Length: 236
Image (cartoon, rainbow, N blue to C red; front, side, top):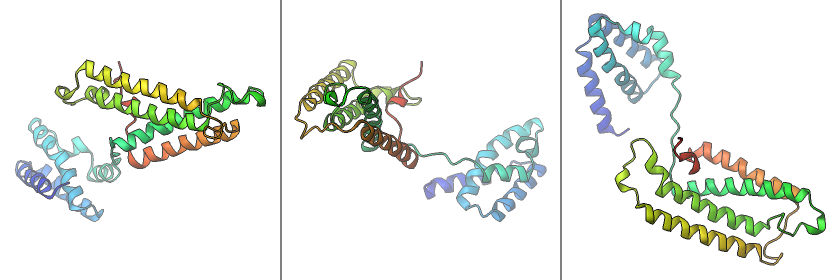
């Protein structure tokens, strides 16, 4: 949090504390001591108090006390200390594309590998199994399409989004249609490459690579809080 913003919150807390009843004032005093003993930083303390004081000042007008609203000082201290850390969300284009790429590579790879397990060895190079290059191309361009769907549509369906910046429908259709056409042409073109440029992997190896891709996606999502393009689609 910026220093200026923190100062503003602290000033607001000080003003609100002057409006407290004697009982509630003592509660806040004891809570501050407990927070200091728990080694919370000044920033954490200021934020925690600012989450309480506006409600406390308003509710004490009806005779409610801080203990009734927030429990004992010990209970409130535990709630503050053990408050879940809000995970940061990332909408960085490169990370969202990578998330889409790994998802598609994992799903297509597993599907292709499973299909390859049920065809004779001599026919694996047919359409039942994708070549590695074709899979990578399909996943890369498909990941771009998914990101563009988020960029042009889904992000504007989120609460608080500025819908005035949403592109015209015809522009969105044109952009997505063009990229999808490119994806179709490039993917099919890659599938026609000779085996030396588009190797057909053993189904077990392909499934293993796909699983690694999905595991890496899970790790990166947890590490960076990546928002999935398709998960951002509104639920009806």
